[in-house]
Length: 41
Image 1 (cartoon, rainbow, N blue to C red):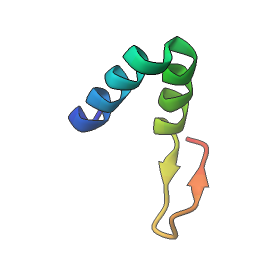
Image 2 (image 1 turned 90 degrees about the horizontal axis):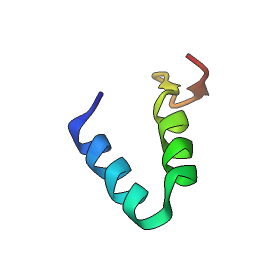
Image 3 (image 1 turned 180 degrees about the vertical axis):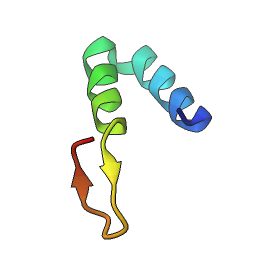
Image 4 (image 1 turned 30 degrees about the vertical axis):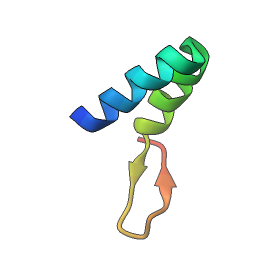
């Protein structure tokens, strides 16, 4: 995906553990439209 996003995910995993990591990954999988609306991919 995005290298910077992977680094953020890895850092959050060390701090907050697997639950929040999965939550971040779920959010990262959302698509952002030109109107900045979140839609499920």
